[in-house]
Length: 338
Image (cartoon, rainbow, N blue to C red; front, side):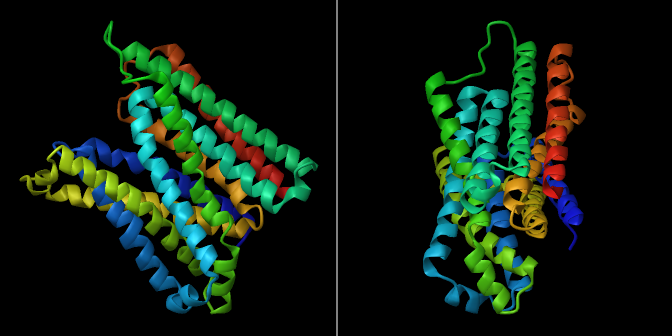
């Protein structure tokens, strides 16, 4: 597979994950925990396990022969991402959507890019290629800042006078979002630091696609546990288990399945595209993936009326932020050719 085809797959993966949250808009009277459990089971268990079985015919042998410590590390990284997913919900609830999500994505982008870069390619950090990658990620972070600024101004312009959307302590919200960003970057660590597993899978005859799918299966099984535990806790505390049996909500199960397909399908395409780029796939591909996800999710926000009554200044910040993210992606593409 060519490098540019790998970039295209990463962009498509980002588009899919950026469209993932649309399903949450169409599941009333289900609560968040109902649809989240459906998404988690379909997207983090059924789909990755099925893909791994279909694309790695000697999956059992790979699991038996791969280094045990590395299998555990990938599983733990996936579980860490799952913890980050739970903390994101708690932090955004206290800090607000614009600032909370942007802070999480900024930290995740920085750590998810620089940790694999410094660990696996330290000789490139102080080269022209390395400086361009660093500049591109800084541009991405600036774009995230502009997106956050625009989102915050939108929230303020749309709130009733005297209303405060934030809940609880600002310090607690900041702490939760910072921790979420740190943990959320671990999904890219699972991909970046799984060479021993993919090497065994390749030796057993698996394609590059099948080898990476084995890694996603292990990581996402780890990620399923925190998400399922938290959703089940809310289902019990809010007494919302009964919502699964409400009349005329049968199609909500399909929405949950579609959310799982979009999220995990996007991740699978990112893995396939990142592998095609080569050694720097997790370094260059991950920020491109996140940039596409942020841009597309905001485009959906515009399309579904979220910005209908926002101020012109808020929209200007958002457009400028998305433009910076596109520029950052272009710079990363140039860096990969150096």
